[in-house]
Each structure stands twice: as C-alpha cells, then as structure tokens.
Image 1 (cartoon, helix red, strand yellow):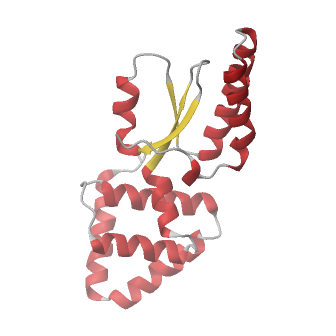
Image 2: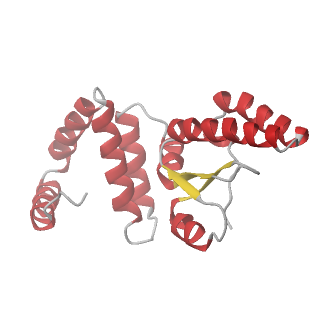
Image 3: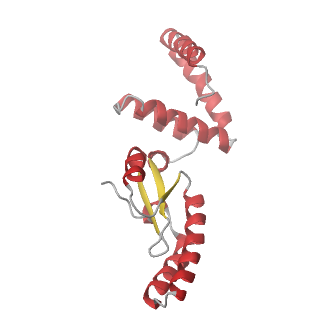
Length: 179
C-alpha cells in the first residue's frame, strides 16, 4: 500500500464517486466487470480483498454498507465472505520455545501488543496459515529432538502428536487468543 500515491488515489476515488452518483447502474456494471476479470487472477483477487478490508477497518468502524459491498465483491470473486474476513482479520503466531512450541490465531489488531509484551521465548508472525504451519512443523521437529535429549518422553510424545495433526489443521482448528 505504501507504493500508492495517496493524492492520485483520492482523486481517482472522488472521480469514481462522482460518476457513481450520476450513473450508478453503469458504474456498478463497469466495476463488476473489472472485479470479474480479477477473479481469474488469485493474486489480484487477494490484493483486492486485502485493500477492501484495509479501507473498511481504517476508521475502526464497521458500517453495514461497507460490509454489504465487501460481501458483493466476494460474491463476484466466488469467495465466502466470512472466510475471507476471518483470514484478513487474523494472524498466526508461532511460539518459538523448544519446551513448548505453539501455534495460535489472534486478531490482527492484537499482534503488536502480544509480541511486544512477550518477555521470554519469541513469537513469529504469519499472515498465511500454510506458512505458519510450515514454520511450526520445523519447530516441532526441533522440540522433539530437544525433549528426546532431555529425556522428557511425555513432552516428546506431545510434540510428535501435534506434528502429526498439523497438516490437517484449518484456521478454525487453531486456538484463538483474543486477550
């Protein structure tokens, strides 16, 4: 987003809004066509949804009209709005500590506070679930070795169990911490 010229973007948005007020049906058709073309390009669709989300949450107020537009865009992209919103509004944190590796899901707004308040160990932050699972798997393997050397069979078995379950986990399976 830092690559976007804010003045130019505001001018384009005002231009679209002006046209929208004058001819809502045609403008909505044009926007629908543009969004439909984006549906074929997963990266473009993801960027559009991320930008839409950031615009909606930028003033910290969720308005009904904004959410309806978000759902409309999702519909044009053949995406499930609830899943998209959840993916955009949460991050995955991986606790890097050989004694107890953890993967948790937290609201994006809480990430900085959690990471900054952490006194021991360290959190790695991921937007993408698959990337978080890959990093977590590697840490589980290291933790298994650690517990094997420390002769902690219970912890070793727990890490092995978590590693075995990891590939099948979905976002809703990841423990969510809101506090």
